[in-house]
Length: 116
Image (cartoon, rainbow, N blue to C red):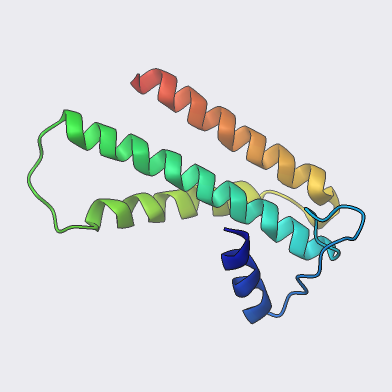
């Protein structure tokens, strides 16, 4: 996952050099911020896709073209993430990103409890 992120970040012009004292963190703040968002998006998307698949398995529905459900989930997740992160202002820093990620996890947990 990290290599895919770094390849994307380098193509986008970000510096992917890591800190020597903390090799799990990037030296540049903006790269670290995007790494956290990248992880949140993948985690949130995987959970949403699993819920969508569980829902479609429990309810027989007309067959849609393969991947149509995945595309719908991907778009929904992307919109949720964009909405959540657009509320941050530039001064919130990594703490703001972490708060958004935690709120997404809480929201996902609440949805899972309601559906389960």
